[in-house]
Image 1: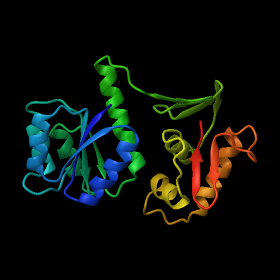
Image 2: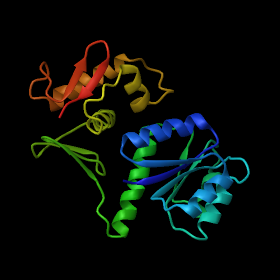
Image 3: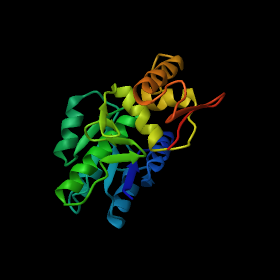
Length: 227
């Protein structure tokens, strides 16, 4: 189980990130200011730290610089600013990557997993790049889908949706929830986008799209994946 420290003074953002990462089986610890984050980083060993720039007591850059004095843990900075200097400064302090707010939670998870995979490879650990469920195999690093050994071409959003469903089998997602998780809360479209993508996904992966084997509908509730 990967151990993640999420640091942000906006508690709703922390809550959302924590929920999403825990859904993927990660152990998530939280801090809401720079001093608390630095204290936790000294006390615990984390696989990765997601660190906001603008925080009370100590800002993200100060925390990142302090952590680098005693740890090489991967650090991803969160910044609400569009100023490239902030991003460059963050990397100069020893950060491994940055993500600009507002963000899509799937992008956050993909970036964190990619960095942890690289770290695992560098240390000789085995990383979980593949998700296998029955005849389905998802290569999360190359974002490729194989069914019974045959590659199936998916669009980016189709892959994101399938990865979400496969990693949470039997969990029902409403159309509104899928729209928010896959397209982001600021997406201007409506829930019909989800229906269209589910239909296209079924046409690609189901032996008989009219009688789905993988992606099922719970009428009045949403969609779910069944092994």
